Image 1 (tube, rainbow, N blue to C red):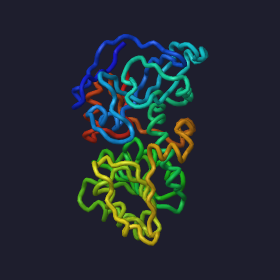
Image 2 (image 1 turned 30 degrees about the vertical axis):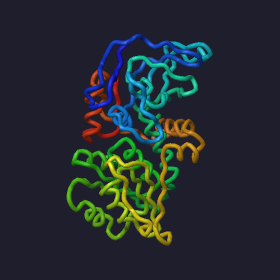
Image 3 (image 1 turned 60 degrees about the horizontal axis):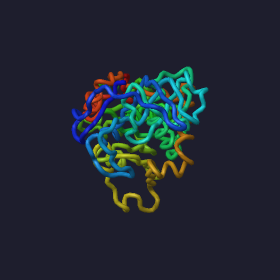
Image 4 (image 1 turned 90 degrees about the vertical axis):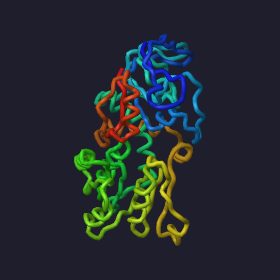
Length: 327
C-alpha cells in the first residue's frame, strides 16, 4: 500500500510518500480501505517534534494521521465479520497511521457513516466535530446571545457559526482575508470581518450598533483573543480551547473580578471528564451532520502524496475548513 512515512522530526518535507507492506488486523481490529484522512494542526506539531501537552511524541519512524473514513475490507480475530463492506469512520488516537491507503482500527472505535454523509464530511466530524460539540455544550449559547467566533472559516469556527445561528443568536465571525470573510458570510454570520485589517474591532462594534458580544469562543488567543475579550459585555463568558496564534489570550484576575466575566477552559482531559468520554461526542457530531444541522466546511482535498503540501497550507493559514487527504 501507499503511506506517508516520517523518519525524523522537522518541516513538512520530512513527510515521505512510500510503498509499505499492507497492515494486518489483529485481535479486535478491522482493516479499512481509506477514502479520506483528516489533517489537524496537532499533526503539524507532532511532525515538527514539538513537545508539550498530555501526549508524548511518537517513536520514529511512523505514519501520521488520527482520523480516517473508508470501507472495511477485512476483520481480524475477535472482530465481528459483519463490519466487512460497511462505510466507517474512526478516530485512531495520536499519530496512528491514518495517512495511508489502508489502516487498521479497533472495532470499538468504529462508527458506521450515515448514508447522507461523504467520507470527507464524516472524517471532519469524527475529530473536529466532536470537539465542536463539546465546546458548544460548555458555551450554552442561547437566542439572546451575541457570539464572537475568531477563525470562523476554520473547521471548528465554521461549525460554531452554524450552531450559534441555529440557536437564534447573533453571530460575529472573524476571518483572515476577503475570501474567507465571504465564506463566513455564506455560513450565515450576521457580521463578518477581516481581523487582519487594522481597526477590525471598531468595525465589529459599529456593526453591532451598541450591542456587545456575550460569548467568545476562543481557540486563537494572542492579540485577537484579547481584543475579543475586551469587547465582552458584563456577565459575558469566554470559552477557551486553544491558541493557534502561538500565545494564550492574556488576562489577569482583575479582568474577571466580581463575576463580571466568566472563563471556561474546555478541551482534552477536561472535556473527556465533563462529557463522559469522547465516543458520545463523536456519535452526536455525526448525527448533527447527518441531519444537516452542522455541515462541515471541507477544504478541497489534497492527494495523499501531497501530505507535505497540506501541512504547509495549514500552517500558513491558506486553508478554509477541514483539511483532508484522499489516497
